[in-house]
Length: 219
Image 1 (cartoon, rainbow, N blue to C red):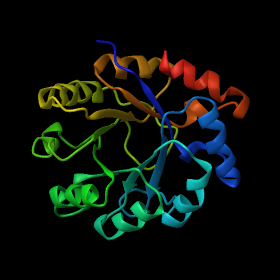
Image 2 (tube, rainbow, N blue to C red):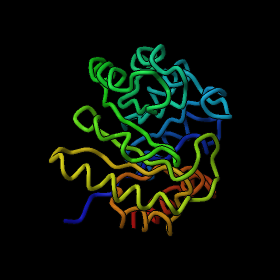
Image 3 (tube, one colour):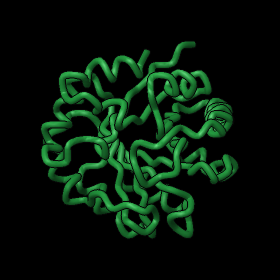
Image 4 (cartoon, one colour):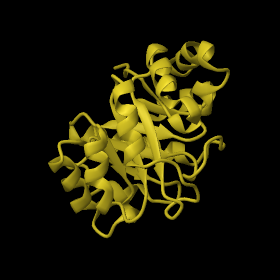
């Protein structure tokens, strides 16, 4: 069965001086989700945006906000990002002492819980979490910066995640983030991905190119 491929442009690669307009432009160009990378300079070596910016951007978007929390500890900030307008909150097992409780809390907030695995995190980390998640995100680069190259070894992890998702019988998105280009997109999809996060590949060339860039990834 052919999977519907969703494209989630990462606003990390957008023009930060005009984020609201950038979100409107990528939605018009065919984006399915808006991927928001939240980094704290502690869990990852970069600092991006907080709940206030998410709240300010929310009125500019009709599509769901797919918020990837690269912050530690993550638990104290779940409510703030939920209140700011996140639709899904994706967290790292390493970002809090009790990932199971964290995912339960996201569900209690009425948001879609997601779990994300860094390149060095084994696939087994999700084995006792599958009943709690709506999304599994496989990082195909080490998180922290845009524009990195796809790590080939993660293709096997995407395949392993697909087997686990299919075994649940539930609809769980399988998202891949990092080094996504039209070429690596094809390979990630072949391995089982159905949602692609792309920053540079979507935003390069400016707004007049966004629709073509998104279409190239989806093909």
